[in-house]
Image (cartoon, rainbow, N blue to C red; front, side, top):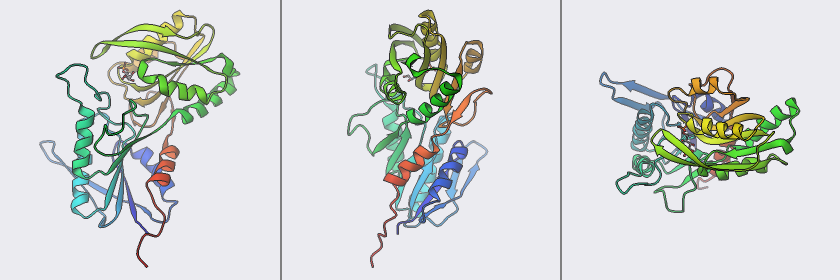
Length: 318
Ligand code: R5P
């Protein structure tokens, strides 16, 4: 039977504990250990402490701040794994750093998401699983297969619990996509909240960290609004969406975020705003202020890995 070793790198340890426990339910999975060293000038060295010859490897690591370090850690680890004879490597990167740079808007722009994926491939990664991919990518966009798991079901479960406790009927709920890229995700969440309706905002970026909204579709007056976005970085997109929804008479506003990067002053911005609740997925660990609820995608990831990556069939020759 094929053997699998699972590694969770720093930055995804809590999620790694949960996923690891679920994978250990299978007879052919073990949890491995990684040794990591940092040289005086900041260079890092990572290596596994297990015999990985002819084994299939699953690495879990989200690549958020410090994003470049985390990417280097993955590349270095994979290089060692391949040299040690690992048969196959699956990278689970729930937050896929650089996914916002997935297309050009100027002829001189890089497509850094493709570059990073190519680097993973060069280091030995055979496939990638992420969560709530930033865009829908055409076949052949990446040099290796990249799959995405959805977070809408774990958010829906949480919202059903909240609305049930507060006596909020789903007929009074609007799922609001704060920009064009969130429309598909928002529609998916709406589809598992029966009775809820959908709205969307069209946003324009006028600088790296500056946005302007250009249109608002949907009826939010006296409604409970869920703003559902994949990434919150500076928080401006969500705050702008809140402002527009409030101006249109929204009763209360919840925010659901797949990847809570939460840079700079985002906590202050949220603390000063009139948000009824903030719910985030655990694709990114840390920088989460008190009062924010966390939903776990651990089961979703483990299910996907068990179903599509790990084979429990006996593949050895008789
Ligand atoms: C944009 O394409 C993403 O979906 C998010 O809306 C964006 O990254 C959020 O950034 P910020 O919190 O800085 O407005």
